[in-house]
Image 1: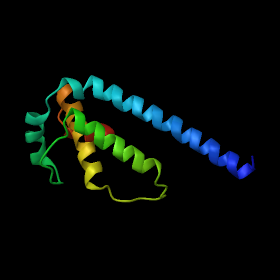
Image 2: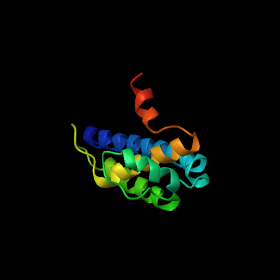
Image 3: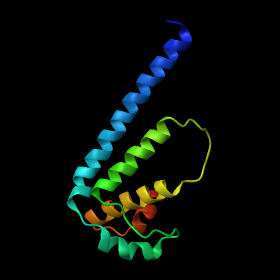
Length: 117
């Protein structure tokens, strides 16, 4: 095997291992929060304070679909630097935050406050 092929093979193995770990963490979150909670009433209050317009929070099945789609797209898109989040990514992030805040009875604004303290 040429050195270039070895590097590519090693990079693909590392990417595969990383994706496996990310999936494990996501599905641990899914079991702990998503499968146990109905976030819609909580989201209806939360969305009033969002700066982006969202009409829904993802349900248990759909959140997994969005996560898998974004994970795959991210894994095969190597674009260094900043970019704006697309609608699917925003919806997934807000949905994750909604489930966590609902389950832990936290004000969603505390996520930002805790981040900067």
